[in-house]
Image (cartoon, rainbow, N blue to C red; front, side, top):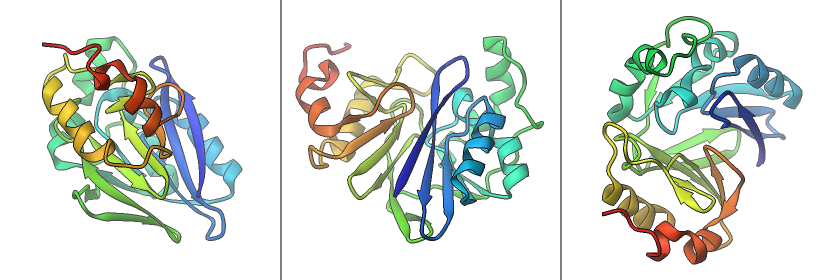
Length: 215
């Protein structure tokens, strides 16, 4: 598995390419604002995009979906609990004063993220874990030694819980149930910021150690 991290946009969101170099196929996780940059990085890999996997539907993670899907033909995957957020992206964009999605309105998802289901690209596979708390339909994608956590878990922090549909205790429960059960050397690829490991966050993340708890 080759992982290409693509920071982009005003929110410095991390889009990721998950590449099977032998099969020359890739999946695109959370194509954010800069669709042109993401498509350029895809082209550099020489791999054929087969899927767009969305960890959740906040605007900074989906604004590039329309153009990327149109130019690659990749199928779009989203957890159904985040479909209302996805459909409300024009309202999210207006609230932040940003430009509407590049490439026009977001196309309807082609498939639902089902917890326990296994996603495949080439010979690679990742398991879907439902991890609500930052948004109702947030998911983490787990592969051998890696976890793509969207905005659930960051290096030294966790996702925001002051947004509609978010809840702090739900998020902490999701992290403890689905992520802290992983081995300490699991690499965490977050939706913002640098990569980290489960062990590092277990030991030092103030939201997980109890140093900083929101009541």
